[in-house]
Amino acid sequence: MDIFFYISAGIAIISTIMAISGRNAIHSLLFLILSLLAISVVFYLLDAPFIAALEVIIYAGAIMVLFIFVTMMLNIGLEHKQEKQWLNPSMWIIPSILAAILLGDLILALRNMPTAVAGAQLIQPKQVGISLFSTYLLAVEIAAILLMAGVIGAYHLGSQKKKVLHRFLEKK
Amino acid sequence: MKFVFIILGVLLIPLSIAAGLIWVERRLLSVWQDRLGPNRVGPFGLFQVIADTIKLFFKEDWVPPFSDRPVFVMAPGILMITILLTFSVIPFGPGFLVFDSNIGILFFLGNSSLGVYSIVLGGWASNNKYSLIGAMRASAQMLTYEVFMGLSLMGVVMMADSFSFNSIVLAQKHGWFIFPQFVGFIVFFIAGLAETHRLPFDIPEAEGELGAGYHSEYSGMKFGMFFVGEYLGITLISAIMATLFFGGWLGPAFLPPVFWFLFKTMVLICVFILLRASLPRPRYDQLMEFGWKILLPLALLNLLITGAVLIFFK
Image (cartoon, rainbow over all chains, first blue to last red; front, side, top):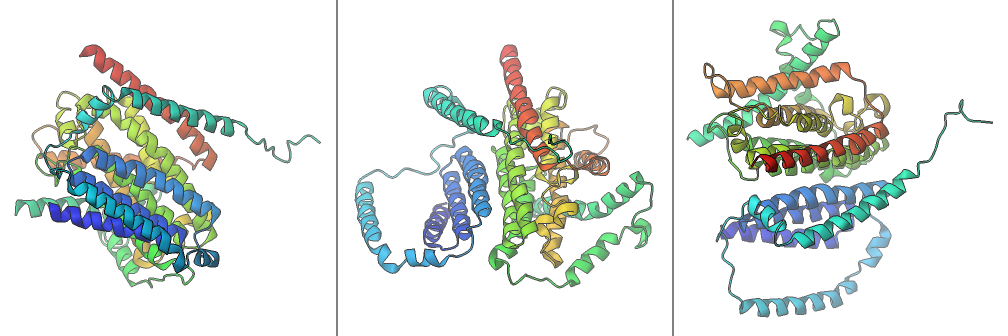
């Protein structure tokens, strides 16, 4: 099982790097989707099939479709020369050094931690639901209120309908 | 060895049904429109599918120079992969399934939401106005209908107490779920129609206004994959409806369970084709309004009432 974990983790890392460094917006988004799918495989291998499925349905399937939708609508998929100017090699130096320091930190910190055993126990969807609606009920309700705010906002924006009359019905 | 046969069966049965549907649909449409339909190639025109396939294989497979080549080539494959993968969790008979997953329904929903990419990317990579409009319509339509496609199935999940297709079939021993879950069935049926973008809801391709929409630049076998993918989608949605609402492979014992499963699937497919023959295409905004204002509240209400009834009787 370990080998599958390393393969999918490697795919996740490589595709995320490609998503950051790509110049074509849609190709970057596709790499991001691939990265999310790889992470979902990792979740599955860690015996959390419910979270793996939700990762695919919500992140890869719904949110990224919206990203692609907006990118298509604005038609910024094609490569831009400006993007090339922004991404010159000297841009990469400082962020890479900072990220490398953080990575070293993380490795040092993780070295002393006990390794979590994959496959210790399979977490069934039912258990996730029960713990969401008992232990984490407050968080669920706060998330619901947040979503409600979004719905009300969308309703407000959508309710102001532009009235278009057929030219025969227009009052002169 | 048995496992190899199961995998081959699960792969080949849907593929051959989908290919055969091309002929079935044309014949049935012509029956309903009082004409003959394809009847020249072989007995009753049965070899029409083979003739069509040979034609598709010998056509020039042209990738437009203005297209985004890697994405353009990849798009039809995504459709076939996502649909064929979903068949692996559907039980064709007792023990006749590839993978009895405890997240079966979620696997289906995830795959159907990934299937959207095929159409969206195909339309975008074609770099053509009409294809782009088709792709944008498809992404909005399929994203909308995915929401209550999932919600409408949750009633069934609550009643069967499981996400696994196999357990859901076994839970229907004492009665099909279509009777207690009729509202859920109707919502799922309409959402499935929109997900497969079949004819009342085929606004992403809308021949009359968009010239085949997202696949107008596709030719040869790439177009063939979109074409067969649509029929595979109908087969999949019908198979899932048969499994979740009509008792799957359960049936009188004088015929094998696989027969009952395929029979129910075929009847539902014929309903899909009848809808194509009889309903006009709605306008884009009508489709969205219908989804958000009627189907979503219906699905939520169904969820609420099912939950309340289940708690009351427990």
